Image (tube, rainbow, N blue to C red; front, top):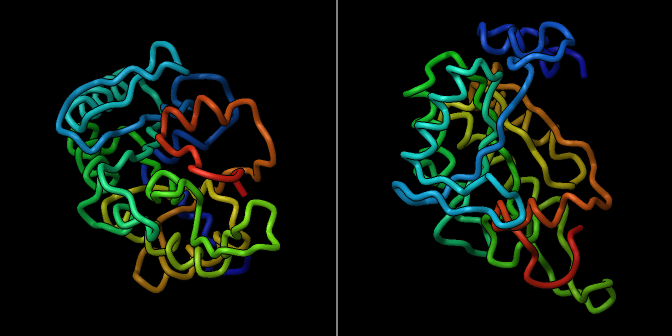
Length: 226
């Protein structure tokens, strides 16, 4: 993308960002810790599919962030597990949702020592477990279709809420075509030109899906992920 969409200075805005991306080497500062945050004050809930790992309450997240900073890790990748789900992913669009509160909590304890990355997807926030808006379609494989373009609007709004809460990077992990451009335009129009986008690779099939779906509470209620 040409300027103004392409701004390499986004990755030079803070020492934590520069430290994370400056060179290729194997060290703690190159590692990002995924954390799965519940909409509760405290309480660790073990993740059966990922032995040794747990879903965290907000106070537990604060301690995890503090430890990660002391260990010299590069950052946190924050996934939210909302207490309320709906077809329009309401918690993902709520400025006081679980991820915005987690971002503010982590920033308060880790300051500028960690890069805070917010997972930007809808599957964990919808009551059907898919990454966007659904429409019944008898011709489709599962009897419904995930509507690409209407889903972009929700993803972009979710990314803006995360940027407003202090995310250094928003990380779209859905599989909607055009989501990076839609998010970039929304962020730029709202004055968040400095917030970066870390897009996940396209996923067609993976044995890692099972443990992740349990950790993030995002398994689809019907049909296959698309």
